[in-house]
Amino acid sequence: MKITKPSYFDTFSCIASACPDSCCKEWDVQVDEKSAEFYRSLPGSLGDDLRRHLKHEDGETVMTIVDRRCPMWRTDGLCRIQAELGEEALCKTCREFPRLTHDYGDFIERGLELSCPEAARIILSAPTAPAITEEYPGGEAEYDTDAMDVLLRTREKALAILADTSRPVNESLTLALLYGYQAQGELDGDEEQPFDADCALDSVREFVKVPEISELPDFFADLEILTEDWVQRLKNPAPMDWDDRFRNLARYFTERYWLQAVSDYDLYCRVKYMVASCILIRTLGGDLLTTAQTYSKEIENNIANVEAILDGAYSHPAFTDDKLLGLLLQN
Ligand code: SF4
Image 1 (spheres, rainbow, N blue to C red):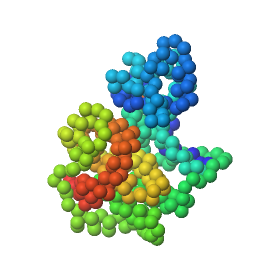
Image 2: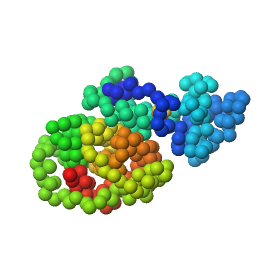
Image 3: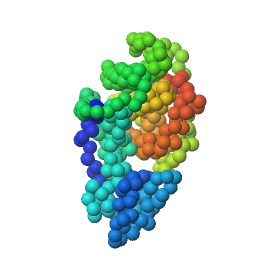
Image 4: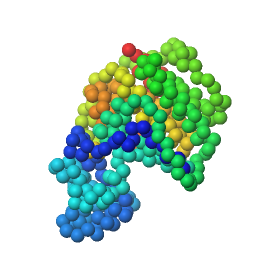
């Protein structure tokens, strides 16, 4: 069993009361059954409050929010459960957040979630560095090994394309999209081929058309939305310049989503999802860190939204190849 994590993974530490947002805002927190049972058994006012706010819905227990906040959130920014009972009393969701785990049986990949402002700061500022890998005994592959071999190999190539700072960042994203198409072919059984970046860029410059206006904000406005702030952001885009932090952003999406194609062999829709996410964040403008973190909170933590985008990547006119390429290559 191999466990791999980004070089920056262990530098994360919750900044609690200094957090400009909070994971205790807007979300219903899913509570694992062991913790729910423990919370319901507690005596005193903490136990009474927990019993009142824990709800069993659709086969899972959630802590319902009150006035847009977790009812265990205190005005000093700390969690009441943690303050009164210690960190070990937190449910699995709160103990883990914003740490991600993708378990493939014989290897595990870990990461940080962009929806936490402190994690987003680390993700967007971390220099490119090799991942850290630890080896443990045990574990069996729970996937199609041939497909995973292709995905691991092509992901390395995509990450190298994104890390190539000899090109402007929007060209790197363009190449990542074009390479994603080739990688899908290799996942479908095509022979491995060299990727000629200059030739690929020359050929798309001939046919792309720059849309007068991006349709992406309207598409995202039709998804499930948490906050009025996000509604206003989508209605009032103010594009920012591409800067090198978009490489980190694209790297984060690539590390998080590329291998998930082993579940359904559909890589290209994920590549379009990653590239369209970068384009949307650039289109909305504002402070990149805040926009990217808000994007993640609104989109990535809602599986229905992610699935709608993966579907839209093939069927919605906002996601056609020529429009995405045009938005990437426009000045
Ligand atoms: S969002 Fe991140 S930094 Fe903010 S309170 Fe939650 S874990 Fe801490």
